[in-house]
Every structure is written in C-alpha cells, then in structure tokens.
Image (cartoon, rainbow over all chains, first blue to last red):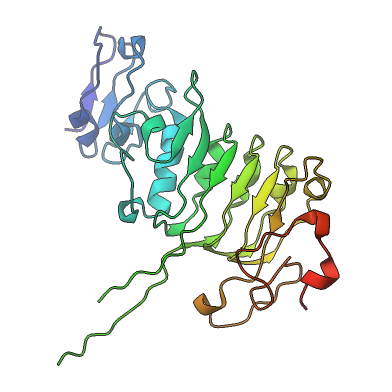
Length: 149
Length: 125
C-alpha cells in the first residue's frame, strides 16, 4: 500500500498498531476524532519508522514530542541491551510509565530520568535537549563490565 | 581444548556530552558519573540557571566550563566533580587541565565540596 487516506471522517478510538507497519505508505488521518481522548497514536507510526509519512506526526496529543525524544535516547543508548527497559518503546503505554521516567502529575512532562546502573552504552542522544522540563538527569554507574565469550 | 578468547568489553555510555544538554534550563541535578564520556563538557552547562548538583567523575572529560554559581551555592549542596576516568578502563593518560580530582590521587568515589576546594591541591598538570 502506498497511501492510506482516511481523512475527513469520524474515526475515533485507538489507531491500530498495524497502521504504523504499512511499509513505505503515506498515512493520512487528519480531521477525524482521534484527538477527542487522551489516547496516543502507536509509537512506531509517530516515529515514521516504517511508514513514509504520517500527516498527524506533529500532533502533540497523538505523538507527544517527549515520547519521541525518549525513543531516540533509548536507541542511542542501546536500550535493547539495558538491564531493565520495562515498557520502553511500548506502542501505547504512557512514556511516564517507562522504567526510570518520572512525569509531572498533570501535564505529562518528563521531570526526571533515572537510569543508574542499568547497562546503558552507546551515546547520549542530542534529543535529550528536547526534554526541556527535566529537573533531574541521573545516568551514573553504567560502566559495568560483563564477560562474554 | 579451545581457542576461545575471553573478552571483557567495557559497557558504558561513550562519546561526548551533547551540546543540546545546555537547553535543559530547568535542570537542577545532573549526574553522569561512572561512564565513559569523552571530550569537553559543553559550555552550555553554564547557562543552566537552576543547576545545583553536577557530578561528572570517572569519565574522560578533558575540559569543564567554570560555573561560578555552583561555587557560590548558598545551600552548600553543590558538588562539582570531574576527573580523569577510571585508570583501569583506559590505556593512555589523559591531559586534563581543570580536573577537580584524579584517580591516581583521590578515590573516585570521593566528593569534592567547593567549600573546601583548593585548585592547587586538586589540579594536575
């Protein structure tokens, strides 16, 4: 599929994960009722990793910019290898519930990121600079040594 | 008998501390100690008006901007710690002009309070 055009309808509820998996497709969902709830769009769709583009990628309700920033941070720091990466990059779970992330109560702004002693490697992503509400960043004690054969 | 090689790879966050960190104007506590960060710490750290605590020890950071506000911290909580990295983790010595401590002389876990900071004592050339 090259184009999924569902604009100007009355679709509501949750955007299915499969929409984000349409390889190379343009996904057009503007002017529906997805924003009527606090549901976010699937992370993969927001990051436009498999689709070519998504016309609501800049919608801050559906695709919170802080979730995108944390996702980039995860990839740069080799999140798949962390000791505990619970809920990170989950398609729907709030990023405020991702391991080590603390948000303000009401606005879902990330105020604390604590991933000490959690097997982080790689690099610290420049996207960290987009988490502008952050008060506390604690990434110490990740210089662990592991034995491999 | 096998010819297997046993590696002890160094797992850690590497590379430089990104300049973009300086955009975090609300940041109060920044702890990046015990990793493998290299290069100069960004000058943007001086723009963080609310920063109270900065811990960078046990990395390979070669230059740290002067942050007078941390020195004058009225609560006496500020720690500004940086050194030359864990010697066992890196082969070559590091030229560090304003490290506040070095592992050869001080425990990496030590925390230097600016109350008692003596640059002549703690700077190596």
